[in-house]
Amino acid sequence: MTERRFDPVSEILTVRIPMRFVRHKGSKRIVTPEGAGGEIASKAQPGPDRALLTALAKAWRWQKMLDGGRYGSLADLAAEEKVNPSTFSRYLRLLTLAPDLIAAILNGDAQLDIQRLMEPFPEVWDEQPNAIR
Image (cartoon, rainbow, N blue to C red; front, side, top):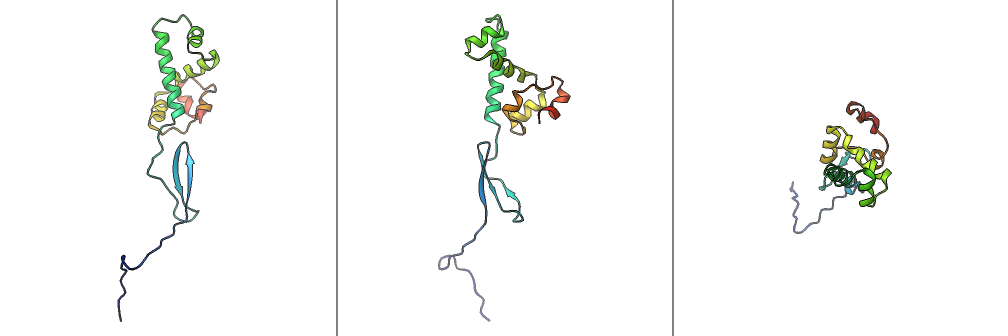
């Protein structure tokens, strides 16, 4: 009996793997069909949501500007920044997020979106996770 060995130089081996690429919050994921072994993460791991990071950065920046004493009111700073006072207040409300939620946002672990955080949420930290998810 002769043993047959695969010779990569003279033979071509084709492997087909059914999958599709899915975009989620700016990253791509490879998804296999159901029953074919589950979901495989692409090399680019999902990172922090840029919209959430930008919103937090604006809120911290604006709070620092208010604390500096140059602006007499929220309305003055909102006018200077050319932002609607209502929108300005919603961004500043992000400063009342629980520290663990802020850490989750910064680490990219939060299952939150900016639209949900622009809606009112409880100021009590223990109540926030259930109210905003």
